[in-house]
Length: 158
Image 1: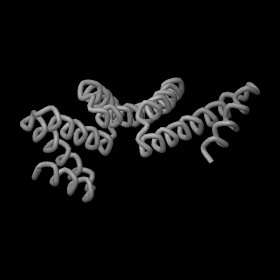
Image 2: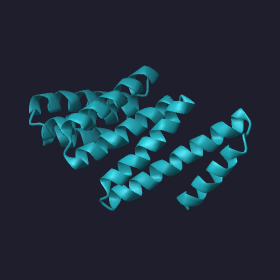
Image 3: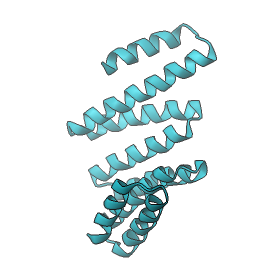
Image 4: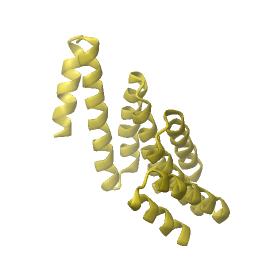
């Protein structure tokens, strides 16, 4: 299904559509590329997943879609974490957090803070991990996200 979406989007973009249609096609294309990246990640092909997520991220950047960019950074950080590349995971999670803060997306901030906390544990810094999970919990309480609160509490307990 995603390949069909990609084919349709590329075909539509090659016909020099209006700005509105071009935006919509690029947004759909970015979503399809992101989904294919998830499939490759689930199959264990992290390098290929990274390629698709970077391609998706590039489209979100072209569109100026800050939420899409932040989400893309988060996904790429996750893939680097899966590879054991703590340095790049930190970098991408922090990029994600910065954009979520810029746009005032508290749910995105909380998610990024949790991810930074998780990667801090992988790096052996439990003090920093606790700090990030507590910040995440505070945001989840503000937005009244009980699942997020439980997730943060789980990591704090760990």
